[in-house]
Image (tube, rainbow, N blue to C red):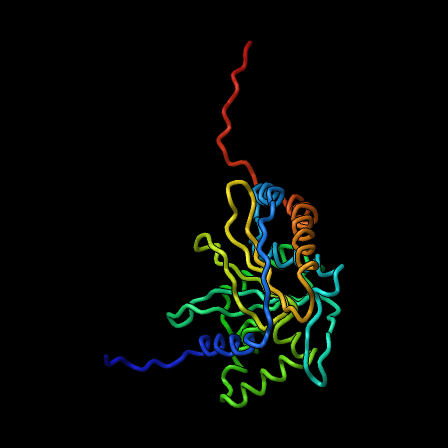
Length: 261
C-alpha cells in the first residue's frame, strides 16, 4: 500500500522528546478513589469556581510543602544523588489546537502552595488561550524542540541530569487529566518524579486519582500516605479557600408575597 509522508510538527516532536526522556524513569503507580464532597459543594457555591486542574495543583503543592521527598529529584550528574527543591514546581498538561492540530504543552506553576487558588487557575486558563509566544514555559520548550536532533538530545541530557536544570525542565510534579472527554484512568509518562492524573467526579462525589512516581526517589508507603493527605487537604484547606470565594448570586425569580390587610 502506497501512503504519503507527513512532516512531524513541532508539538509532536516535543512529545517524542518527552517520551525519550521519560523512558529512563522507573515509574510505579498507585490508584485510589478520593472523597471530594466538600470541594464539590464549596465549588458549586462559588461565583467563579477554579478548575479542577488548579485545585489539584495547589493541593499537591500543599502536601509537598510538609513532605520534602515530594520535592526531590533523582539526578545522575556529577554523580547519582537526590536533589531537594526549596518549593514545588508543577507542570500542567495543557491541551491546545495549533494550526489545526491537537497538541499538548506544559505550563510551569512555581510555588502554587503560596498562591491564591484563583491565581493558579488564571495562570492555567491563560495558557489555554494566549498565543504560544506569550507563555514563557511554552517558548522555552519549543525553542529547545527546534534544535537539530543531536543538540536536542544534549539539551535533554543536561536538563534531566543536573538538579537545578531538571527542576526547570520538568519540575517535581505534573498534573494531567482527560476527564473533560469522559471517564477513564490515565497512566501517563513524564520525565518528572511525580505525576498525578484524575478522572471524572462521580455522583457519590469521589474521584479516581492515579499517582505515578519515580521508584528511585521513594517507596509505595509514602505514596499511600500522600494520597491520604491529599484527600485531607482537598477537604480542608482547599474547600475552605473555595468557601471564602464570593458566593454565586441566586438568579432564580423571586415570587412576590401577598400582603393581608
